[in-house]
Image 1 (tube, helix red, strand yellow):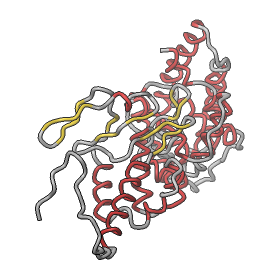
Image 2 (cartoon, one colour):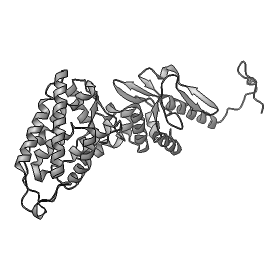
Image 3 (tube, helix red, strand yellow):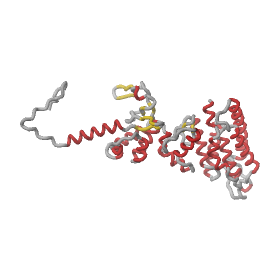
Image 4 (cartoon, rainbow, N blue to C red):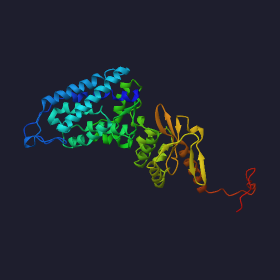
Length: 367
């Protein structure tokens, strides 16, 4: 339990501190629309509430005070949970009376601190707040970054892949939906590249940094999906970043894989993929295949969909999962040489040439 609780610590405040220092934005009379779910004031305007602003700032300071120690004792954890429960009770009352605390009501910093407090409340309350925050963001009355963090946090607690890559669990980035396009989604809400965020979190956790590539955060299944996406788009740089070094890699975006191959890979990558363990039984035509122990070392795995095996092993190298294209490329190179040999003209046998004899143990093939 302690590991899960520790996720609710001060790093959230570190990432949000820049906005926390913004001066409050005061709404001019008649100049702002209603907040998300907020009752309107006279004429539909939302007037700045200095008392509510100051209360949210004080609550956020209390929120961070109980998270100041990164290695909490049992007593400190108990105090943090008590404060979170009291804050949730108060936030429920605030939202019942005002809707989501929008910028026009409590300033940019007050709205930011309301989000910070809700991030440490129950999942049930977060789910209630999400549509209110979405409404406020759409109206320009709250931060899109805050919405991204809250949505990802809820998905993580539901054991679902996150959308924007904002959440870590046990000091590791939680799984990300469609990782090949995560930076596009992050950009849409004002977040920087995921690789930069991972670098920041690595420094916070005191870990050595991985190369600046989102592959550093991918699971084996996510690596497979990202690889297939890069392959379909002929993204050579991305393919190289996701695969083990191999001099035959250019074949992947040249003639080694046909369009039919790519369509089949894409179909498998959209399948319900899972990582196989030693001894797992894989359905095959006419029977099944047991996964050999060499694919369950913790550093090499096979990925399987409902329909078929992914044709490349996935290997862990310096903490990063990489696709090993070597076996397939070697097989394709062998096929290519065989085809070339078949196209080459056969030399005419000389008068003294001996008839060809089959290898020992094999019967000659009949014409």
